[in-house]
Image (cartoon, rainbow, N blue to C red):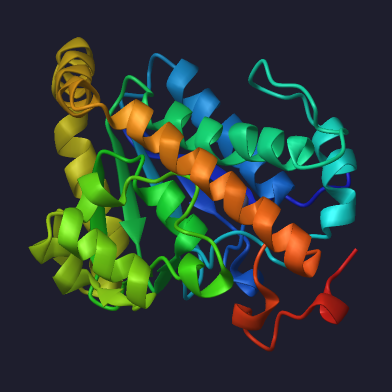
Length: 286
Ligand code: ZN
């Protein structure tokens, strides 16, 4: 894998602060297998370094993330997975039926997002431009979300025949009614709306986004790290006590039914009638 490009940058811009930066701007930081494994390795590095107390997740380019890379060839999924050391005790990546796809999504999507959510250090997402579908699965696991004024969020998966992204945190992030509106309409919503609904902590002009994330990270990094860990576990424990984990697993399994349905109807994981014309089956890369 030595010829794999580096899609993730890692630096330590301030004392006790690590910054992980998505670096695939030409593809709007869309996420394929390589991107997600590299991102997980970067989170591991920051989590395991006792000198790091706060982690920033940022992105280079116009958009934070266009979501999952629909151009990644599904025929290569099993090979792509086997080229990486899997993180979770999951098997079946090379199996038939829907087993391989479910295993892949348990590892790469819900597995990684939940893992990042539980890192025992504060995490701050700095979001600009579009953050679509799978992009939400990078920012929702973070503890704090700072958005630039031009940030746009959406989960348009119903349009492509799926009932929501794999990491189904919508209800906790924006509430029941807005979650339904977001899913039913596939509409985009602004940073200001996201802040009104409680999903975004702070909005800043685009040119101030990096500094704003660094300023908050540096202030938090001066607090006792063990107290930060305990505070994070206490808050996360509140939503877990509401049944978050089981509810999200239920949604994930419904999501798998959607993939099986689309495979049967279209031989595609998603409904091709909802895919933008620029991303067609014939244009898919190897
Ligand atoms: Zn899926």
